[in-house]
Amino acid sequence: PLLRKHKYDEIVLKAREGKELEKEADRIYRKAVHALFHDEAVEAKQLIREKTILDDVEQAIDACDRLANRLSNLAVKNG
Image (cartoon, rainbow, N blue to C red; front, side):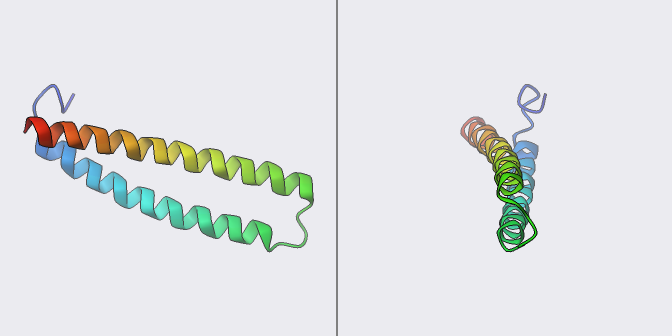
């Protein structure tokens, strides 16, 4: 809707906010992976399963960040 309404400044602002959220998600991801690999109580199957889940969530967040960047680039180009 913002792109259709030519609210380019808002798109750029939202993309910046999204970038900050993505950076925070990266920090949380790294911390979670570190904790997972340093927990001696975690069995191999569980470690692999949880690492896969963390990787999938990280990839989804990165995909959202890439989309936000594309929309921001469109807004700058057309604004």
